[in-house]
Amino acid sequence: MRQGMAALVAAYNEAARIAPVVTGVLAHADRVIVVDDGSTDRTSEVARESGAEVIVHPFRKGKGAAVRTGLESLRGGDHRYVLLLDGDGQHDPDDAPRLYAAAEVHGYDLVMGHRTLDKGLNGTVRYYTNLVACNMLSRWTGLDVLDSQSGYRLVRADAIEAIALDARGFEIETEILLKLCHRGARVGQVEVRSIRPARKSRLRPVRDVTRICLSAVKYQYLMP
Image 1 (tube, one colour):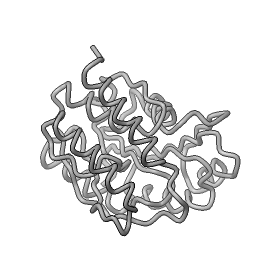
Image 2 (cartoon, helix red, strand yellow):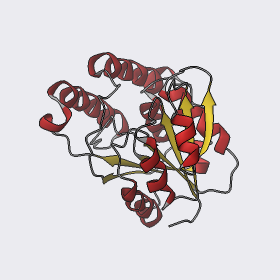
Image 3 (cartoon, one colour):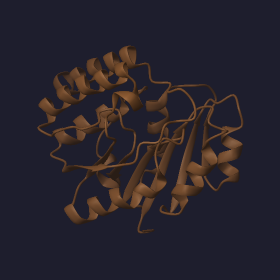
Image 4 (cartoon, helix red, strand yellow):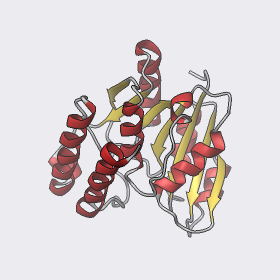
């Protein structure tokens, strides 16, 4: 599948988990960029030893800022797609070909990997906050958004380079989706495996999903 796909991983203190993420996705991508968002452990060293190109923030800036740094480093490259995934091991790198195939077959500009939402797996609070965000985004995009909080996505390089991003936190995925939809992007969804992370998620369901929803209002109604 090495036909112009670069992978971008935002990571913070993932030294114990980043190696299999990098080696797994390198089986499918031409290159892997890891943005170490101010980690205090060996995330950057382990990622580099595993084959990734590493960019280091001197201090923690937030997931959105890390994604933006990585996207800027890829701007103007010879890749056709950018694969976004998290560094905590919750995404199966072997699902990447399915996202890629969906983009190629259907001409999607953005393919979102969606997990099966399950209160037992995700926790009751995260389950319901995800549903709230899914309903809101579905109404605004005209899509049946199945997993608003999934960070596993494939986007066409020329599409992502055409929009200006400013999110600093977990709302980065919402910003990308809404701004691409405003430009008439074709969006698809592919079911992906859900792997329980080895550590507790850093997303705080109520606080962060509230912030995502407020940011979505800005991107939907207040942006030019």
